[in-house]
Image: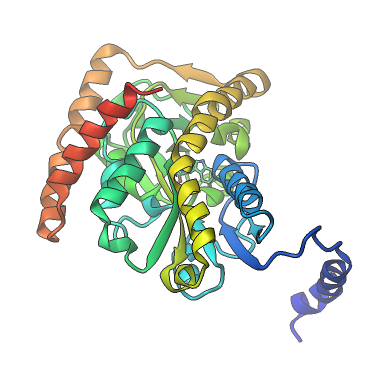
Length: 342
Ligand code: DTR
C-alpha cells in the first residue's frame, strides 16, 4: 500500500466512526441532497449555499435535508459541472466564467458592460437565463444564479497607469482573461482557490476579481493595492442534473423554483452591502491596503481599450449561431431597469 494511504488510514477510520456516532437529525428527512461547492463555506457563494440549504429544509418542513460539501471536498472548480452530470453530487455550485467555451452565451454577462453592482448583475443574469434558455444548460436544472461585483485589479505593485499594468502577470476567471489582455497585462486563467498559493510563489502578481477576496482568501496579506477601476463580473450557477431534478416530487420542485427567484437578490445584497465593505475595512486596517485612483486620462484610455470587446464577442458568438446581439441588448435593458429598483 502506498505510504500516503497508510498514513491516512487511521484518519479515515476515525472519520467513519465520527459519522456513525453523529446525532440523527430531529426529523429524519425523506430526501437528502448533496451540494458541492469549490470554495470555503464562509465566502459569499458559500453563504448562499448554506442559506439555500436551510431555507429548503425549512420550507419543506424538514422533508428535504441538504448535505453541503464546501471547500472542494467533493468537487473542485474544474470538475464541478461534469461531476454533477456523473452524479458525484446532486447539486454543484460552479462558475460558468471559468469555462467560457462551455458556457458561451452566458459569458456575455462578463463583458465590460458597466454593471453598477452584484445585485443588478445577478438579477440580469438570472432574467436573461430564463428568457434565452441557453443550450449550454440543457442537461441541467439551474437552481441559483448570481455574480460578484465587477472585478478590480488587486496587486503587489501599485497599478496607476497602462504602463504599470503592461506585462504584469495577473490572474482572472476565464472570462476576465481577454479583458486583462486588452488592458496590456499578461493574463492567466485560474480558479479562485488556487490564487493564494500562486501569489505566494510568484506565479502571479495579483488578480482581478471582486474585492472581498482580500479578506475571505486572506489576499490582503500579500496584495497591498487595489486600482479603483471596476471591470467585469464573474458568474456563478448552482445546477442539478436534469434527470435527478425530474425525480423530485412537485412540492419540492416548487420550493426550489421559489428559492431560485430569491437567490440573485439575496446573494447580491449580502455581497454588495456587507461582504465587500467589511473586507475593504479589514484590509485597510489590518494590512494597510491602498486604493489607487486612476487619473481621468488613464481611465478614458482603459475604457477605449475595452470598448471593442462587446462587438467582437457578438461577432464571434454569431458565428456559432447564438443570439448574441439580442442577448446583449436585453442585458443592457434589464440592467437599466433593475438599477432603478431597490
Ligand atoms: N469571482 C471569482 C472569484 C471569487 C470571488 N469571490 C469568490 C468566492 C468564492 C469563490 C470564488 C470567488 C473569480 O474571479 O474567479
